[in-house]
Amino acid sequence: MRRIVGSAVLTVFIAFSAIWLAQNIRATSGVPLHLDILSATIEDLPPIESSDVPSRQVALRIKLAAAPLCNAATGALTYGFLIDSDKNPATGDASAAFSDLGVDAQASMRCDPGSAAFTSPLGTVVVTTEQATGVTTLELLTTVAQLPSTDFRWIAFAQETASFSRLPKEPDHGAWAILERRLH
Image (cartoon, rainbow, N blue to C red; front, side, top):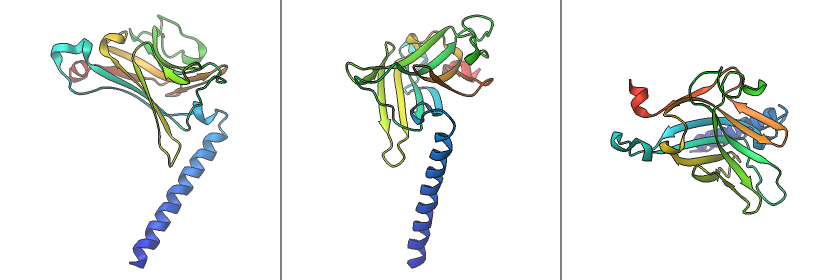
């Protein structure tokens, strides 16, 4: 019994040390933790029915190293996805921060200082924070009909005034398509 307890304590200590080390490494990267994107995903939500693709629910998620503050004192704070709907870097906006995409649209979640909440014209924004780590997920729940295409490339971004971060790092990008397109 004593070994199991000792092993559990060691495991907790190692996990805590890894979290502390990861947070300190990110803290020295020059990007504030609330702009440090750990992961980003776009996925179809069940039920997935081919008969009503436009109404299908889609979740756009950005996982951050720390919770962003959204209140009356918050500056321009935006998270989202820059979308290349025709998958052609020669069309759309191609600034230096995302020259690997021709950005045709964006799906964004902005801090509304008046309501002290993140909002989006595309759907509902849900913010969850893991209490043990402080890792925060911003999730935009929308439908296929609200997106500019059923097959596109993307990069996730976080921006506060002049500070900007993206994932994946340049020159990489993510890709999403409705399930039917991914199966063919």
